[in-house]
Image 1 (cartoon, rainbow, N blue to C red):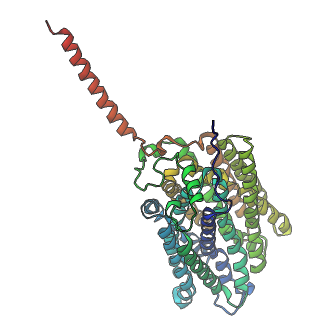
Image 2 (cartoon, rainbow, N blue to C red; image 1 turned 135 degrees about the horizontal axis):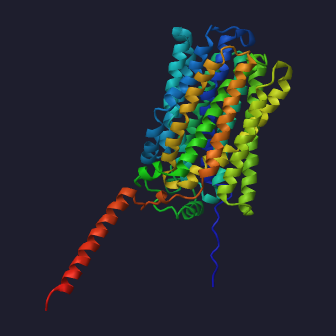
Length: 485
């Protein structure tokens, strides 16, 4: 009797190259997305940056419009992106937004200094948001096609850690650039160059899936295909989307709520941290940018700590996957909720403690990747891109609203009591978002993931037809039995 051993792919392969390309893609796009939080401070306070470039007298409300405008456009293509990546694959769809972001970043300084002012900056960021709305549904679709289930945590978290690296660069490196010879325009030019380099790498090395890759070896291709073979029709593009089943699924809504909570928290911390540090802690632009980046360095590093723990826990079967993801997500949400409340009570005399709490807050929150983002692929590999489009689209309504609400609450950035309201509200959202996920969330693959899944309406029609057939059949049988001989 022969024992079938589990096939293993090469230790380092093309699937890892694809994850690296996704990491860089998220990284460069995040730099272009988030550098506005530092740029706005540099543009409106020339005393703490290179004074050789124009300074603008923008109000707090106008700054809030700039910071939130990206998300006005970001929502536009979220839902269409789910269809587009299913139809055309991730390679072409991911190229379009990054190339568009490169062009828009390159023309940003010209548009602002030529008389467009904050209105031009808003318009450019809206367009950047439109382009980048295509990205994350494609990222999820691409990961689902390249990640064997046993390696999903590893490849997925590595790819998504590009957001942490991008945030670090947007917060830290951009401050150094603004203080250097290129001034604040250099922030946009560097972002444009990074996006352009990634586009070239993606064209040369990216591939929609293992079966169509020209770089992959036979052993790795077979390993990926066999590991995903339980998902019938996984590499098909025309599997009907079970809309009714999705929109009546409690686990789907739990995932939606927890990702909305994360969206609010991300936008509050990423976009408002420089303003808080400059206003309450009275830090200059250079040290402000460096210390603003520190929490996201912690987040970047901690994402790998969470990954190592998850890999060990799964390998040693310490707990079911659902329990693992919920446990990590609880630490990632409720820990930061407590830290945020503490941050609101600190002032400029407690700068070190404030930075320490913000660092702990961000580091703990790094677990949200393993805790809830990858649950989308667990629940439905066949529809992961579309689910990400729906969830990311709705969740990013909150980053659009958050800067506007902060602009209303915080009328004086040096007023600590106003920031207490912002941080307290974010802590409450963190708490209840995770509570919903604990009650109704799951990593179990949903019945509607199957390629042959029948929509409830279809099943009802089939059941009615069978009932009619049985009635007719029984009626005919009864008639025959009662027919006189």
